Image 1 (spheres, rainbow, N blue to C red):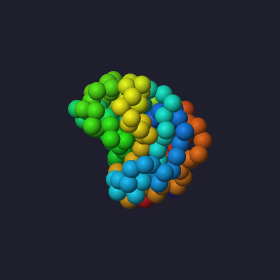
Image 2: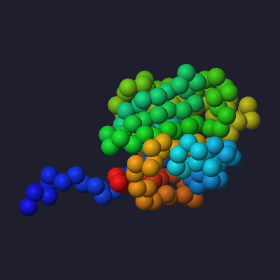
Image 3: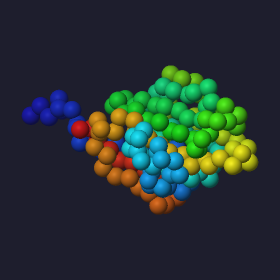
Image 4: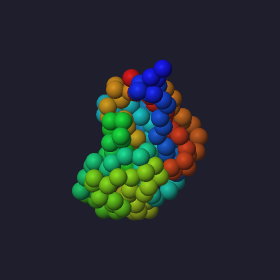
Length: 163
């Protein structure tokens, strides 16, 4: 009778592609920290575009000075890291422009970082972009959609529910 008072535990939630490109399994990333899931569970994209967007509605909680990554916290507590490229921290922020500030509320598909992809590639650095759920043990990860082309803000890459 009072089912409306119960928390919807098994509602499937989604994370969309933060950038256009080819979706790969995290184990295929050419960096053991990501490939061996030392930072968390997730997925990666070999990007075609130069805009990296929010994969879900939430709050931007981290943009390092190097602007090569951003962290988000979603309303359900999920903590997400989008790491643009491999070893891009070594560029010291060159080639990356933040389009929002920390503590900004964003919607899925909102642009967060702009990347000068030609510059990054000219330095011989991979733009493969892992998307990591930092607190994945708090959630039931129900689906990972890899192997195809993704469209930023539209293609669902990860499905999950609360435990």
